Length: 505
Image (cartoon, rainbow, N blue to C red; front, side):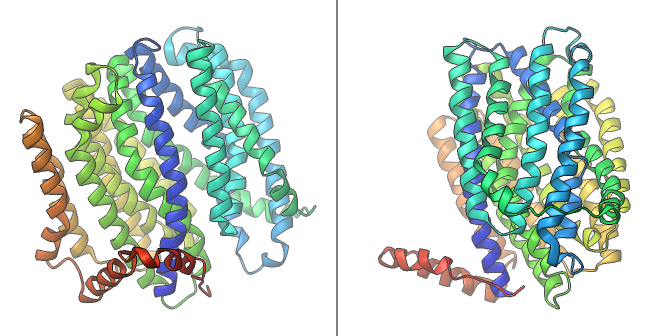
């Protein structure tokens, strides 16, 4: 199991490097998007609505084929025809995506009217649809890269796309004065270039093959996941749609910025681990140590996520002041702890749900997601009129907590894993107290405030030590890690050793 954990950490670091690049691109663009010289605060709210609409469209256009492909790829009955399986899935994805685009593009004017009560954004929505379609195909290719454990190629190609999108976005906004339209034109070009760069890898992993029975089975398996994915995405974006309907674009803008900052944790830690553990869990599903492996991955990931939540919540005011060009955004400090803590439940859900994937209980997943989405909608309707942006943040936290608990409850019935729930409770309660403590320091002078916050971040892991959170073996492992990597003379040898981490899964 130790080798599996080391392999997971290594690949997570590689994926994490790519996700850090995504974060940096996002942070570079925030000052541009919040600069009144280029966008009003209302236009930043429009960008927020368009971004979540792109997410919904991409999920709709993928039709959950990548999820089905992921489940079938390592199935023992199809390991001898993986290239044929990819070819069949890719062709099916292209046909579905292309057909839906043909239907959606003529409706772009109506979509603009529904979202913004004007057809002014029709051309932007056309670009949005094309970008979403190409992203859907990109996602299937990315799944193959992950299944093949090509974490290096995955990171490099995605980094290339990010650099292209960043450069073009800045060029279109600052030089060409294209405004919001330039943002989505850059994304279309970036997605197309991604496919072009990976064309050799795509061809190499294709073999002309078609099996109608297998394709039907994949669609039958994937359809409940498709409904669940749509519901899941809606659960994650309904907050901004609700604010757009029940409040004003200014509130959408503030909440969008807060979500972007909170999602830095999800992007760097949660998504990096998820990209790694999905193929590992599937490969090890019949391994005798898989359940303990899942338990430890949940605990270690939750620790890292909570530490990041504490740091981000404490320094959210300082970060906001640095990356925004307007004081109008500074009040998001009051909702950052709530939104950040919702990521803790997202992280746990991403791991505990695998019992249902392994047991092929896709319908159960769909029912859970749909019920969580309904709960989120109801909570937003109740809480937004009461507390506006704060109400939306609270609705998100409660919905994500419910989502995790239901995944945990039903997954344990199908595929019991001995999770260390007592330690997870200690971690959540302690982290919550630390995260909200920053609100008590908002009016403190800058220097004392920074000193106190740095002290709180530094002592957090030691407080957990006092609460007996760590096992003796874990403490010894950390000491060995520090001793190994603190010796800069051995840095080259240590980096080379990462290449030799393999695991017979």
